[in-house]
Amino acid sequence: MVLRASLSTIEKVKMVRRLEAGEPVSRLAGEAGVSSQSLYNWRSAYLAFGAAGLDRKRGRPAGRAAASSSSSPDAFAAAARPADESVRAQARIAALERLVGRQQADVDFFREALRSWDEKRRVNGAPICSPSSKP
Image 1 (cartoon, helix red, strand yellow):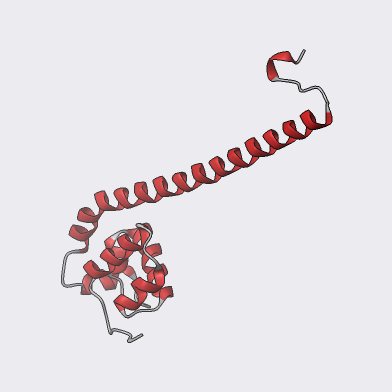
Image 2: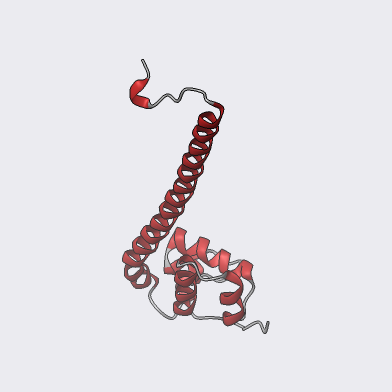
C-alpha cells in the first residue's frame, strides 16, 4: 500500500459513506492509500462532527483547524447535516436488517428443532400436544 500524503475532505466523506454502505475496509484503505485505522478514525469524526470533523488537522484544536481551512467549515457542516442524517439512517437500517436476519435464523432453527422433536415423539408413540389441545 502506498500511503498518500493527504486526501481532501470531500474524498474522505466519500470514503466514509462507502464504508458505511458496507464496502470492505481493506479495499477502501488500499484504494485511498491510507491505513484501515485512518478510515475508522474518519468515520468516528464524521459521525461525531460531520464533514467539519474530517477537515481537522491532527493535534490541532478544532478552532484553529477550522480557521486555517480554505473553505468555510460552517458551510461544510451545514451542507453535510442532511447527508449525516442519511448516513446514520442507512447505518441504522443496515443494523436492524442484520438483527432481523439473526432473529429469522433463530426462528428457523427453533422451528426445525420443534419439528424434529415432534417427529421423534411420533416415532416413540408419545402423544403430541398441539397448542390448541393444551388445557
